[in-house]
Length: 340
Image (cartoon, rainbow, N blue to C red; front, top):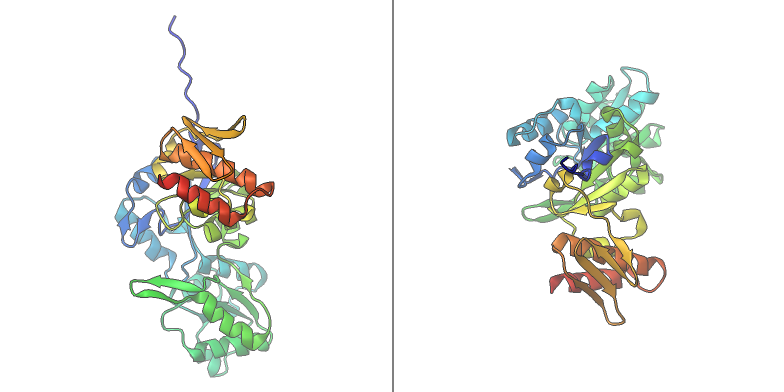
């Protein structure tokens, strides 16, 4: 009688749904990242695409993803604008007037949520509003920010899509929505309700679309301070994918609130079993790799790059948590060990 073959479960089989970041995970600019479309198409669980970008409506994001080869509905895209409009619609009366600050994604989200967007020009002309939804737009002016501040001072509820201070461009960093929010905050002397990563609302909205609890979903992203911290804040597992901004050394230096549950080289690893690091005497083992913290540094031997990275993270995180290393030292040791 033939011996039964035991197949280890894949990483993605642990979850009922995926909350997936976009830039640095699915695509880099207009171009798809190698293997990402194929991996998401074969995931076997529903996927919601969640982004802090408030300027593009879900229809535009969905069209971009379809052009890369993904199959999805517009409702499978959650932006910080749609999360903000949904938050307001829960408490307001259908048709209520909301001051829309930002790109086309903001008024589009308000209309989809059954609310009435009011432009800064209309507000300046005397149109009353009960709330403000503030997001990024390249044409947002000082006058627009003044209207937002005046509405908030008059008692309007203030919801902002995200607080990303900067916006990457091909010429460098430009002020992001967080910088514009800061200008309004100075005038009104109060804090807004924030929808986008790393705050929970956008993740909670994504879980609603997936039809599962946050604990049953996983968030995938390339940024620790937004994607992974947002997952932790919401009670989701977070997977750091190494196709975007942050790498092994960044993860090593991350505080517990930004530590991923898993780290993968690219999305194709979702379909593979996940090698969890295990304690091995005074070291940490992951697959064929062994990481040992020494008095002078971190020694990592054997295994492939991913196994080495996972073992190294386990070793330095333990040392940070028990006070033997600072987070900066942890990042430096992992960076040095994996560069050799």
